[in-house]
Image (cartoon, rainbow, N blue to C red; front, side, top):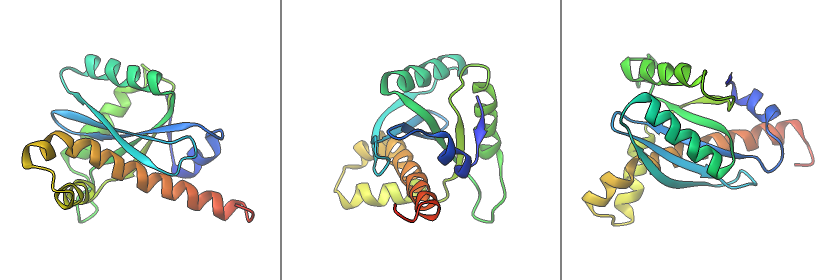
Length: 162
């Protein structure tokens, strides 16, 4: 497994490769997937966290089932740009995945992704109970959509016919 920059990921991916977005929470892992054109991120299910080994196997089973070729994982950076315990836990999770998979990971600054996801769910008039069930996958979708937009920007900059 490798940790890539967004630019390296753009060079690594083949046309049609699917990317998974992850929002690593303390009790769940929110999941999302790109389409083959890498234009849209779609929220998927959540993985209820138990132990690292069980969580890792569930994540890899999801990646196999959906043919995900890379993971974009939200890095919870503080508003002042510093990295606290949650960012350290995310980095530790990725380091621990290293022995289990060759699928590359890309960190994505997830500041305000959960806030944005909650606003959208409120605008959609989703009840408080259902919001709590869907928030992590919605946040994963926001994380992945930001990464997809960045990949599109990289492609436009490198290909004038894009």
